[in-house]
Length: 349
View 1 (cartoon, one colour):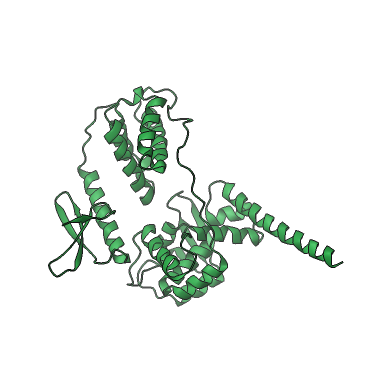
View 2: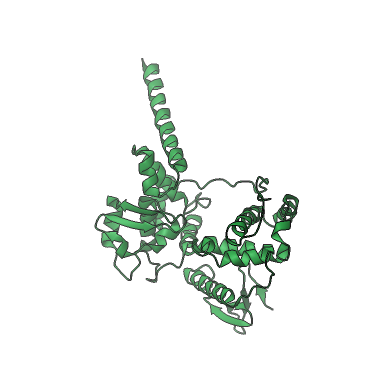
């Protein structure tokens, strides 16, 4: 009997020899997947099949909604540069939620949308996922503005503005403790040690590290066009990163490759293998995330005495908000240390 996994479109069953098989199955087509879902190869293949399927669906999709409906506005938005120029992960997440909105309220006229309608949709989606419900509210506001600006519909103020969020914010990504970094470097393979150095000493997001190429490296600097913000940053290469880059063979255009010598497909692929090391090989580190190393970088810059504009320039933040946060955190730590030393000296006297 076929058992469906939690991954969409993936099915699995045991063959007549008792060996478990995995397939990507959609629209009557079936494609084999590697035997072990915990491997990088499995997730690379799954991501590739999913991207191909989305491309095919987008290519053959025809507008099934009349002008002025929410479904029609969604189709206009999906074809516009406002959507197409977003990063891979953002587009994937947005499209998933937009498909839900099309199913639920696609036939309704966007001009008839009222705050209470959005609350009803939000609360219904929240039964399954509160974070998805908040994204749905945000996207309805985006669609409203898009319809007014680019579809030339006569609309007033957005009914999504000011609606309460229902998702309780999760704990922020924690920076990695020093002992975890040391343990990771001992437990991880050479490609993952390189990944940690790139994440820690450039401070870039996981997807941007995956995309780094040798052509981006120019002697002691590395150029990055950030996928999320489209910010261009030019980072000086830290001496520890330079040392490991010097030892790294150039297998292809990409700096970072998996243990099989192939580039990681996306941020999810790299984050997955790093998470397995944190979970399986380092006690008490399962709650940490790859993105936490970006915080390590920000805090290290602040503790080194970097100014807010310097931190902002390295990390590629559009606004100084996060850089100010790192600077304040570092300053508080220094003041706390200084205060305790003064207390010790006063006690000794």
